[in-house]
Length: 150
Image 1 (tube, one colour):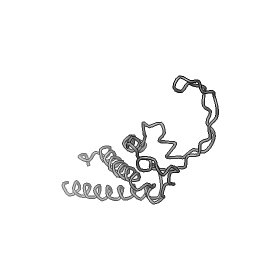
Image 2 (cartoon, rainbow, N blue to C red; image 1 turned 30 degrees about the vertical axis):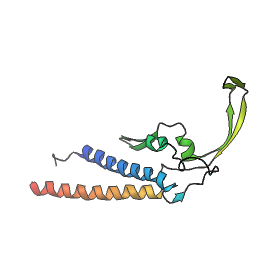
Image 3 (cartoon, rainbow, N blue to C red; image 1 turned 120 degrees about the vertical axis):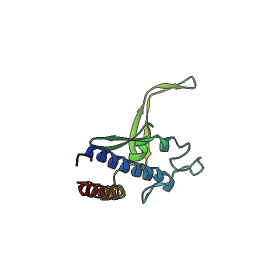
Image 4 (cartoon, one colour; image 1 turned 90 degrees about the horizontal axis):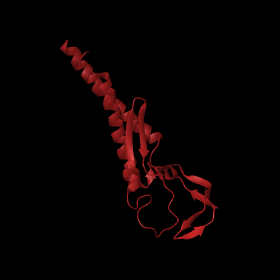
């Protein structure tokens, strides 16, 4: 058993899961849905681009971080969580200037529907289970091969 590195195996399993999930989360933008749950259509039907994909910045900003306690998906875009979780409520806007003209402080009502593209769910857990099953079979084959050598 000295030839088998359990930490390397763990990293490989987590990397496999991360790659599979990132591919599926990326595919959610093409599906315009979080797996089977369709996104609400946008109000402005004349707007450019697909839903949540005008220039593709949000889609390409999703990155994966593998740590000892799991896999974390993050985005560098400040509006990623707003779209992924949705927002309903009021927002305070500070006084500022627009094109050299002063704008007073005011409140703005926001109602942005949830258009989830990353997260946990039934389909996510199914993908994780498939990756774990595949890795368990590989582990079993490696273990059998090591035991036969001895």
